[in-house]
Image 1 (cartoon, rainbow, N blue to C red):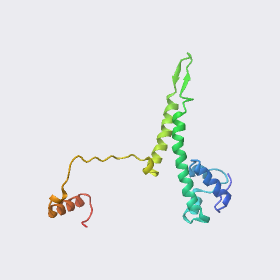
Image 2: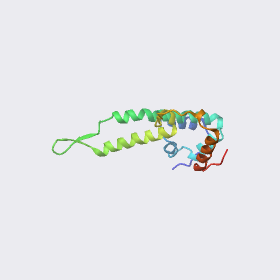
Image 3: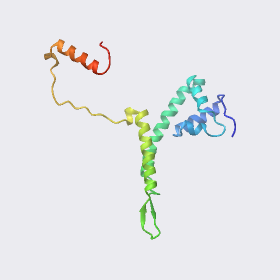
Image 4: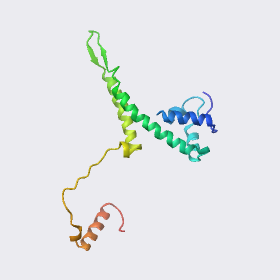
Length: 157
């Protein structure tokens, strides 16, 4: 195995950014011969070497969008979902179906955590009654707020 590059080069940086935008993980990219370690790439990001940080962020976001596109590709690809058994009967290959489900679920989880506004679970709040705040005396509101803060483990404002 060739030694890991630690020095920034525009060519290697561009290759990393392109692969990230294509949805490849940084771990996978950096495991290839001739590529820098993940630590070296993180150093380039943290020190914004030659404007690398903003381009890295854009490539990461593009990679997430690629993962979103991959969900449809994986879900729509049923080529290997079935096989013919020794009697010529068509059977579902559960291993292939489960692997596809895992691939989709992994991408959905990553997207929900890293892009929650677009891909996170939406929580619908519904209010079914009216609260007339003006009718509640201030001292009762104050004591209720203090009690709630105490339950949450906070300190009083």
